[in-house]
Length: 213
Image (cartoon, rainbow, N blue to C red):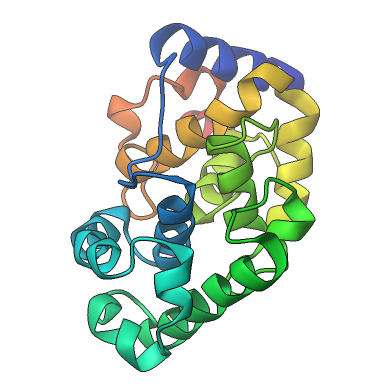
């Protein structure tokens, strides 16, 4: 089976059976989503959703967060992974939003990546979820699932991103990130993937290899 055929089969299945797929992070506006995505790095969305109500209650916008020190932010994020660095990133990010972008979260990928704590994955999430740009954010779930399915052999998230964007139609790219991340979170898990429950085995390279073994 060619890579193109795998993409066609997998995108086709998701399009028909999971036409709507969205982030599981809870947020009320783009600023809150940016904070939540920064906090979600190497941390579960479930954990982030537990801490953000109090965080957003205390710091509802960029101005209030920019006025805070990392030490003031820390108690609100102490239960997420790497709380000290994330508290510092959030405060610095808010200050740069005010100084460089008038407090508004930019839509441009490079502008987003200029913000403290924002890498390419985070920038792509904001660009696709909020601004509907045809980009695909590659996190650990997307990276793993793409390799197992045979959609990419890229050694870096950027290489996987290029492979996915080469074969996935423009109008499907924003939702494709959610398809793959949710599939990796609940079916194609890092340990003990649930192949017996997987609807994508007909196009999965790893499953195909297991059947031949």
